[in-house]
Length: 235
Ligand SMILES: Nc1ncnc2c1ncn2[C@@H]1O[C@H](COP(=O)(O)OP(=O)(O)OP(=O)(O)O)[C@@H](O)[C@H]1O
Ligand SMILES: [Mg+2]
Image (tube, rainbow, N blue to C red):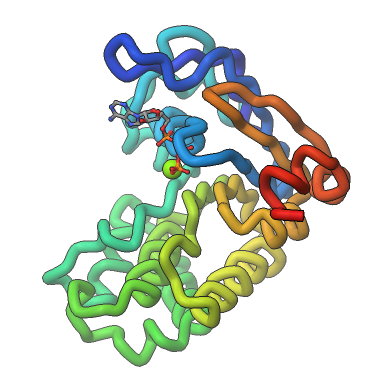
């Protein structure tokens, strides 16, 4: 479904990704692990079209996308949930969600998806008329994920959805990501610091270090790997 082929990405002269190759097949949940500064967010931003690779290419469903502007990539179904702080603060929860669906014309399907995310996040349903800027951090993160779902993603990319959240809210987010995967059958590319959970739910996982992919395997296999256990699972 998604093929990232040997891409090199740099900020000015500083290279952040050195020949990264990664694939995501339809129906997979693929997770990307790596320490701070490894290049995970850079990779997601490049797939989203916010950064352009210096070398290599990216294709989605057989179409080259690395030269497309970000909104075209979203229209093809590659949607990255923004960070929780990137919601529109003065708009209500409901209007933020509607913004997520602004390119879609099928009103019935949009209404159905709105209901789906309100079922998924009852806290957002209760706060549908509240200004998004007054949500708690965890609620704003839920809104960001919900807004991405309203864009009807074929591939949903999440960059550390549980970052900075209290343990119970983090559990909520984990649960919801699994529900999205299982009930909506959305293909997911997930960056997540909680390696134990991320490897447990992943179909496959990649480990990134210093801008390079250094390991790739089934989540369960990586969880048994000694280097992974020491570096990411704290054993
Ligand atoms: N806008 C930028 N300008 C210059 N360098 C950048 C920029 N954004 C990121 N970098 C650098 O690129 C490298 C990769 O950063 P990136 O944000 O992709 O890492 P990450 O794996 O997402 O880390 P984290 O786990 O901390 O989020 C880092 O060395 C970072 O300092
Ligand atoms: Mg990051």
